[in-house]
Length: 159
Image 1: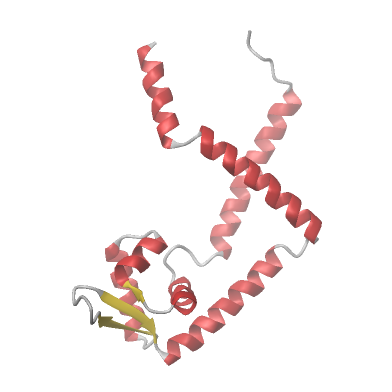
Image 2: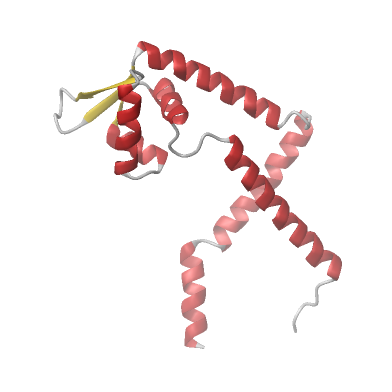
């Protein structure tokens, strides 16, 4: 027997989806991006010397993209790239003194922005929101992973 949904449930679900889409759009505007210069400087500030390969993997970007951005940062005098003494195939990335100043400023701006983003919520509301988002993420991650989607597609073809 199929479950019949009330119109209020459907509308509320649609409203939630649209709110998530709007928040996603706002987050993209407010956040540095996967491979912005600011984000790279902050990562280097927080982790110290990092290999180019590890930095690229951490940022979730392609090696060509990281090379281009790192070249710009290097030309600006914000980072240095030096071959590893242990393995000359590995390029180690580190902040210059100038880069450290820029990274501190970028981190401070990020922290201020994050504080402003949640200013309308008190700590109890933040904890509740975090709990609900974690619950949704865990549920969606279990039910809507690519392997589950592929299984469902595969099973529906067999029927």
